[in-house]
Length: 443
Ligand code: NDP
Ligand code: 2IT
Image: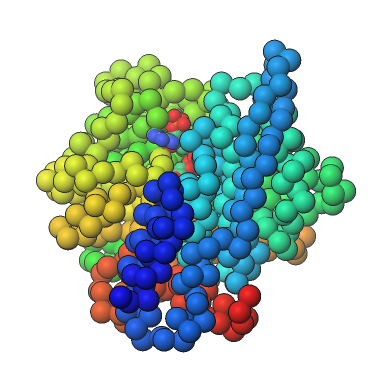
């Protein structure tokens, strides 16, 4: 049995009941066969066993009081996966479905994603099963303060720098930062995604979505295609989806779908982003309200975005939201490009089907790295006690995304898998971290 197969078997055995973690590790390790064959020193140093085991995983109780005066209890987590190339870095997710398996998959993916950015950041992820939906601002604040009252002892600007993810946006980061500052009596860049008046970076809000489009543009250009004039299916209606749609429109494409966890809209005339921002960013409402703004659009309960014919599909909601039958529908309807804005939105079967059918497939850890890359730029600005203009940050982001595409394209070719950007991303992301681990000895 090969080193890869042996390690994979052990990982699956040692981490029962964590299907998302199994899925992420399976995909990455399978891509690494040719690298491990060429570099036996990685096996000697136990790199695969180490890189699949988090450095540290913390779980704690979060107690807070709701508006009715009742004491509530949630679980808080932080998975510090790997800090070979920089402090742990990665978002916090607040969603009832959060558990160790999901955070381990996200933390594991983050290690390779952060490596691909070319910036000095390790990988981590955290969060809680707390649901911000339907909570008052005061309840969200009470929760965030209690969450940080435990988390603060494990993080720091040179140790671990959390940020947002599903359910964690500017409001939550503000409350978390305020409590950290109070507990440590320290004003530092311990979180990213901060508000502009207190150390946030211009363009961080837009970065994941914009970055996804810069990446997609680079991928299309390398394959003699362009974005202008294309029809785009987008899923989700959160931070990533909204700014993906905004940049797609700016580049001359037409997004025709968006969704939330209740339902989805199809607007054949092109999504009205002003309406979506008002519903989601200002009122924290539901996509069902979209048809009040656009009576000609359709709203459907459930899932169904991928049934709408498109040229480019951008899944931007959550893991495993694009199934095999969705992949089949996309191919049948003439879609030629899928780039992942969410983390691991395509199942393994869907990914394989899309690749086998000639779809240009941009995997999450490369395509959505613009968010964390801009978080790293926020850390740089905080360290310098300085801020760059929107244009400066946006230009750097664009350069980073173009570089990521060039590097994964190159790695895919070097290891005999041209245009297999899944392999390219896994290989290029892995090599930098593995070499840093080799250099630092058996730690
Ligand atoms: P938001 O909370 O801003 O938005 C999430 C969107 O996805 C909402 O529309 C939400 O619907 C929908 N959604 C969430 N879970 C589900 C589900 N189980 N089924 C259907 N729809 C769902 O999060 P983000 O936009 O920040 O994150 C979206 C994805 O992008 C995640 O996979 C995240 O890990 C990834 N990502 C985020 C980055 C960032 O910088 N924010 C960076 C890189 C990746 P509803 O309103 O009903 O909850
Ligand atoms: O999945 C991700 O890359 C994020 N949620 C962003 C992490 C960050 O530290 O900005």
